[in-house]
Length: 190
Image (cartoon, rainbow, N blue to C red; front, side, top):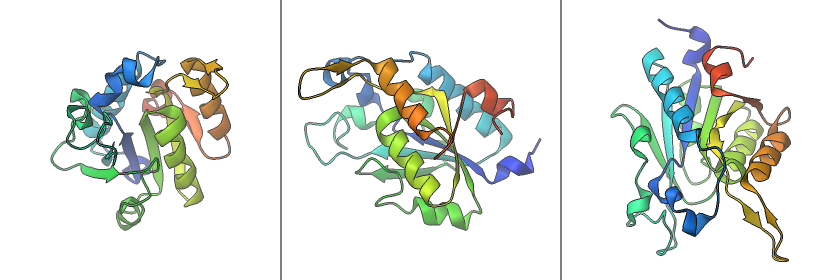
């Protein structure tokens, strides 16, 4: 079963790493179904034989949960890359900076990218903006991402749901299409 429209569409799994489970370190998060939805997307892409790409954050800070020597650097079990799936390590928020991702996508004829992962307002957001600016057609799967609460220096705290929703709203229509897992899998995100 092939869909020529999606053969040039890559699913990019962003920072599905064990270190993000440490809520004492990161703070409260939203969308407890993000992992299940990410797993559903990944299983669908694999079943269809479409391109899957994994990105992980390689922190340069030794105390970070995402530092390469820390156990938190490892992928969450559902997101473990298959042998034939590309893996990119990044040291900044964008999967396009310091990696060959853009060149590799173009070499494979991929013009559309579907993004999910952690966190909505950081690495998913930055990769979305850069992907769109580089000319890729970008879709963010809203229920396969999550955000953490954020705090300003004056002490105000913004809940994770608000952070997630505002990040998606700021991207929708200008940098990406924002759709759900069900819409993407059902082909109703166009």
